[in-house]
Length: 210
Image 1: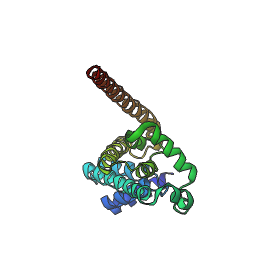
Image 2 (image 1 turned 180 degrees about the vertical axis):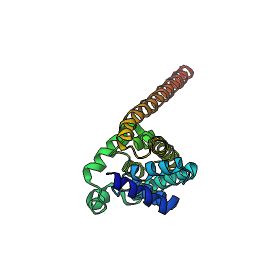
Image 3 (image 1 turned 120 degrees about the vertical axis):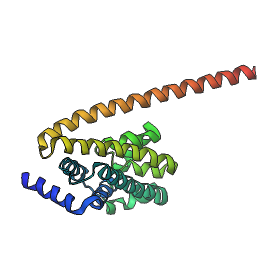
Image 4 (image 1 turned 90 degrees about the vertical axis):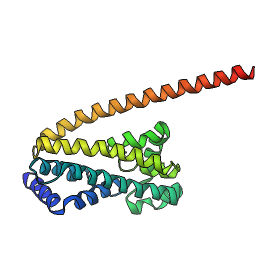
């Protein structure tokens, strides 16, 4: 395992920021590529002064956004029936579409933000966003924020723990749990707040009508 980690670190270092961008593009599209492979070694290299952590972050988040836009366009232009029928050639299973579509319908556009933190949802949440014709600007903002959080977490773990994979995995579980709870709490707060404003608006309309 130590040799594999060293090889990954050397590969990321050799390819530089373009390599990070490409790897994160693949991870964010339909290609099954783990983002940890790119971002954690980048954080480790930044701790040694061999990479700029801000540039690594922008390359990672930018690659994630580009890959997500690729999936968004697939959903937007080709539609659900096409993806269900031919998605298998892109390694996209019908049950994957069903799963992410249900998640998107339940949580709305904000799912493209905190869905980026959930394995199995992260790579494919862009598909139902495209199928549902979510506004591109909102999609891009939410996706970049979610991808940015994820990339920042992985970079920080690589920076702090380096090659200690066991410590990284343990810390990652706790950090993601905290982040997800915070985001879910904020989402719930604003949803309740908007609902209250909507109810007050309807009440005022009823008063004026009477």
